[in-house]
Amino acid sequence: MIALGEIKTYATKLFDLILPRFCCSCKTKLLTNEDTICPICFSKIQLASDERLKIEFERKFQNKNIISEFFAPFVFEKDKELQHAIHSIKYQNKFQVGIFLGKVLAANIQSTRSDWKIDLIIPIPLHQLKKAERGYNQSYYIAKGMSKVLNVPCSDQIVKRKKYTESQTTMTLTERQENISKAFRIKNKNAVKEKTVLLIDDVITTGATISECGSILLESGAKKIFAASIAIAD
Image (tube, rainbow, N blue to C red; front, side, top):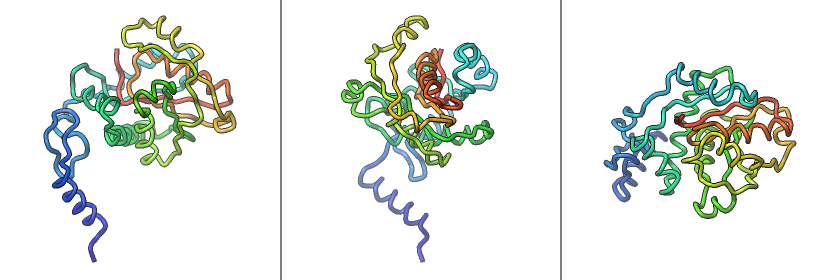
């Protein structure tokens, strides 16, 4: 009898022959056992040290008393492998990259934050106009990948972004906070009441968006808010 794993491997080889897969960073052809990003590119992604995460939490979250703990496995670097991967999710419809990175993020949380008892995973929502323009929310696919590994439900139907916000790339911290103020509302308070929620974004820069969303969740009855992203950025 042929094992299920052998069938999947054969199917992958067949699909790769018909429709080859390529690394989302360097664009080299992936081998059958490789997933979305080649090992060479993956090995070049800068890891976020415990000390760096501690400093980032103190800078971005500690004084606000909204986010209880925060985690990211990588550091975002411009024009490097991780930016290529994230851009492929956001702008090239590479949903599988999001799911793959979500699984990586979840595995890191399992090994380094095993005390996190999460009831629900919520991706930071896009405004409906921006979602219509892009066609999807990249953070949802990251959350979906995490859900598979952590065996925790994820939902993009609980929090709504009611305010269309401008791109925050070039904004100062104060400008970002003003830009994101009162941007969210909870569609179903019962879904978060007494729940420990894990908020997910692709990259966290100042933490303003995560904090604003977390604040609304706490006001709606959530017990505790954790936050995680694929990467942290300055």
